[in-house]
Image 1: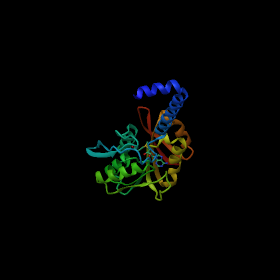
Image 2: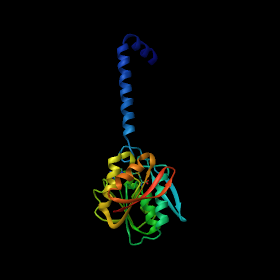
Image 3: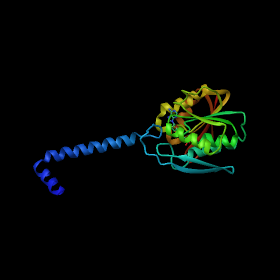
Image 4: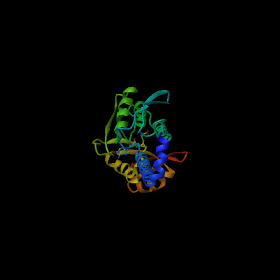
Length: 235
Ligand SMILES: C[S@@+](CC[C@H](N)C(=O)[O-])C[C@H]1O[C@@H](n2cnc3c(N)ncnc32)[C@H](O)[C@@H]1O
């Protein structure tokens, strides 16, 4: 019956059918645009939750991370983040009395592993509410007493100074945000503090290094699969 009605409409009201097709296409495009605009750093409370567990081990210590839709690297630990943590840990074993800040911490991989392995005091900040909530759960799950997480747009809510600031910066948030995270780190570092970060050569590692040379002594500490781990000290 519905086929007969559709055929009848198509024959006698072709303009109506064409209009319907335009409306369907417009809906499809706006949904598609919505999905494309949905980045890992936006807060979308309507995004369906699908919690999963990710496992990681370093120096015989096992970690479990809860992850979810709408956060960065939701299905596995990001290669660049792993490289950053493992490079940092090779140089720093115990940092008991030191304070570290992880900027754009996501569900907490960098901050939590470094906190557990070095026993430093770690603060983690992020702009994404779902990531912050997961990070709170991951701190408890991995039993890390000296680690806390709070919401902050870059350094907006950061009041303390740190010996180390560490970040896998949000490239998809744009160069302006990335440079702000890296450049303004110096305002939150101790006098002899260090900024550690990772960036891919195709995401502007070299130009970022050049821009930072104005206020930091910057060295490449590790290179792997196109990713560079940098250490920057205030000059
Ligand atoms: C490349 S991800 C790294 C996440 C996590 N550190 C990891 O290694 O899995 C960058 C993170 O920065 C966060 N972010 C984006 N813009 C931000 C901003 N303006 N202030 C703070 N965090 C931001 C994102 O929500 C995301 O969690």
